[in-house]
Image (cartoon, rainbow, N blue to C red; front, side, top):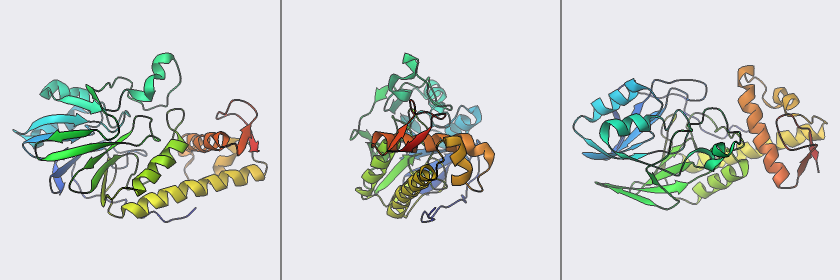
Length: 300
C-alpha cells in the first residue's frame, strides 16, 4: 500500500479543557479514546458570545459539563452534527436539554433504513433526529460566522462537512481524519459515494481541515489525494486476490491486512465488502449470491 498520507498521530490537548485551535475556533476532546476514535472525539466551538457547536460528541455527561463550563456565560445558538454515529451525535440531546439550542443535521441515520427493518452497522445513533434538516449548500448564519453545509456521503449517507466561510476551513467529521483512514461500512457506508465525495473536496479551496478525530490538517489536497490513492490501491489488492483464486472476504483479510491486529478484522471485512459492492456495481466483479460478507466473488 502507498504511504502518501501525512498522518499526524500526536495531538496536544487536555481532557476537559476548551482550547483555541484557530481564530474563532475552539476544541474540547471527549475522554472516549479507542481504536476507532483515536484519542477521543473533538467537539468544536465556532464564534464567541453566541456560538455554534460542531459534533457535541458521545453520551458522556462529564464532556457536556466541561463544554458548558468552558463556555461560561456564552450562549449556544446552533448544535451542528456531521453524522449519526455514537461518538458524534448523542451529546446533542443533553446539550439541547440544558441550553435550548436547536440541532442541525442532514437527517436521521441510514435514510430510514432501520425504521423499515433493514440492517444498519454497529455504532449508529438511531435516536438522533435534527430539529432542522440541512441540505448541500445550506448556510447557517451566526453572530460573526457563516457555516456552509457540504453533503459528503460515504462514511454515512447523512454525513455533512461544514465550511467556515472567510477562513477556507472545513470541519470534516469522519470524512477526512488526521490520524487514520475512514471506515466505510455497508449498507449505509458506500464506497462509490465516498470516492465521489473525496473528489469533490479536491474542487474546493479549503486550506485547513478540522476533523472530529485527530489533529488539524493543513496539507488538505495531499491528504485527499492520498486517501483516493489508498482506496485505489486497496481495490487492486482485492482484484489481485480474485485473480489468485481467493474468492471469499474472510480469506482475503490476512493477505491484504498484513500486520493488522485480528481484533480489527471485522471492521476490515466490512471495508473490503464496501469495495466489492462498488466493483459489482461497476460490473467488474460478480458474486455467487447477493453480495455479502459470506458470498464468493470472481472477476467478470
